[in-house]
Amino acid sequence: MIRSHTGVAESHALIWRKSSRSNSFDNAQCVEVAGAETSILVRDSKDVQGAALSMGGSEWAELVTRIKQGQLDL
Image 1 (cartoon, helix red, strand yellow):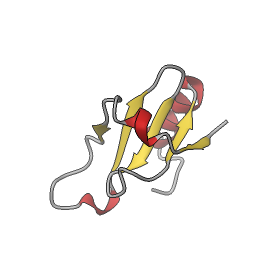
Image 2: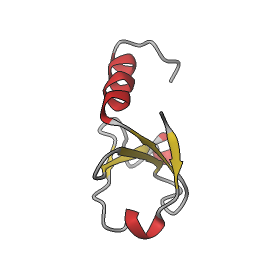
Image 3: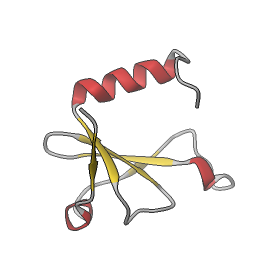
Image 4: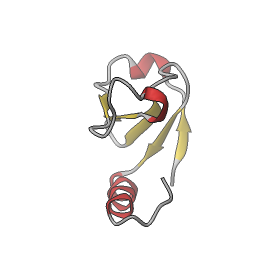
């Protein structure tokens, strides 16, 4: 299950990592990820105070696999 997560206070304690595919010239399409206690959070790097998607480890693994296999229109 993927949920919207707006725990702004909680997100300050998280270590957010930017996509390795991003660059400093094209931040328009960049996401950041952070590992929380029981989930993986994904947010838009342009709106760090906004909502983040929250998913479990198996959902994250499936998403990454589908992206790597070119199954999603990104």
